[in-house]
Length: 397
Image (cartoon, rainbow, N blue to C red; front, top):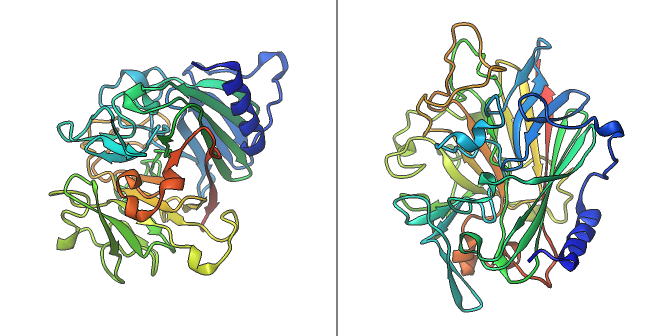
């Protein structure tokens, strides 16, 4: 039950950790547009969000020619997010535990918990289960011209997870920058919590006449010389693998196009059995540099397009970074009316996008030897789970 004590505790945590202060809008001028979306904006950036999954639906950045490009995937109308049975997790917040959970189970203090499976013939749980957070409507608790905050109360036992969790998701924009802050509190029992932003990117806005894919995007992971080893269905197997220099997973020694090694034999199986491409959890190794401020110590990832000149530098307080090169896209999902160009495909082609998730080491709840418990398990007496990230946009001439 979500009682007054829980509510006050959650509000106190939000006041300490959130990035925006609620200023009541004059005359209730803030609200959804005709498509059910909520707009925030600042210099050089416009973004739209919906309560369903606390999802980003549109993100506009101007390219080298001053043309405004919508560079994230989604649907034109908010209502279709809940209607599409394919549910590609467009722009939402997967929770209460992002990515995959091996055998749909985990152990806390000697007790085994079974959560609802929803992937690979029900052999694992992906993104919180068949009714995870990005299937649900959040509540808007604050909005200003440049910030919006969503909240959700996830009850004890939902999808099999123990305990109630109260969470706040705050999106703020400042000049050329999108800020994310996610706060979650376990109010009654110990429970796994790991969140992320499951945003799909195409920095060309699907307007590149030379290619419908994002394989031409240049990608850099300067701190990621290692990745989490997985089996054929992308479940961590307990190993940590080296991204050897010049190998297909080497994005750390120098930036390179995502499609640079697309024909390499070793790329087959890299994203699962018989899959060519990327769906990998790269470890962010920053501790060797000593104390650091994640906001200023350098981006954990950079993605750039030569066609539009748009570049995004991603700064994050998280210790891992998942990149998916959209090998599972098959040309059935539409692009938005705000994207594309004359004579170009109106659907997302295979490899037509990039998903970039800031998060912790995936399925760490089933790898106790990684010693990630304080990053993955939270109880009523623990500090709140917090994820922060900022996406800084620039244009290369």
